Image (cartoon, rainbow over all chains, first blue to last red; front, side, top):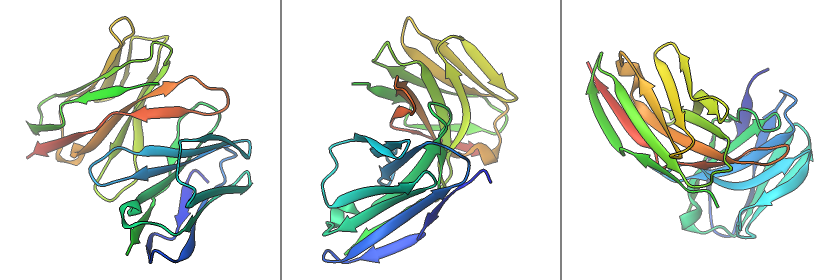
Length: 111
Length: 114
């Protein structure tokens, strides 16, 4: 299996909702990443997990809460989001500092 | 921290022409430079990468050159085809152990007309 999968594909939520984005890979990669991508912009790094430990938090607001339950799974818990948080959320994985493989993303709309 | 600039922001070519996209980076410690292609509504996909111990790498119609002294690297696509139309992002990696920290350029929208 050489793919990163993400669910759901699309998500619409209100500002008071709590939701979670999920990411999974079975390539044995030990580094996993969350990115946010706005329209016509590059991916912007949010979090990095290395060997299931949070290694980087790029000053992301606490309404975004990452979780790495095991080496294959990465979650992003969302709570009290703002409309400006609407974006494509991409998950990626890599084996150490080699090529990053991206998932298809979750397109999030916050009403 | 690392800063990556990318030019041009848009590039229109005729099918069969060559296309060149250029990036500069600021951190001389960066040692890995990938190029990603992102089609509309799709995920970014790696098309070629280069590490700082080589100056050029080629894969069929795609090549990347790296000038460490000047801190710039370029993507060259020859014999362009309509399916090359996409947004291309360069990136540079700040050295880390066990993972990559990529900083992306702002992207180049390439349009190849038949």
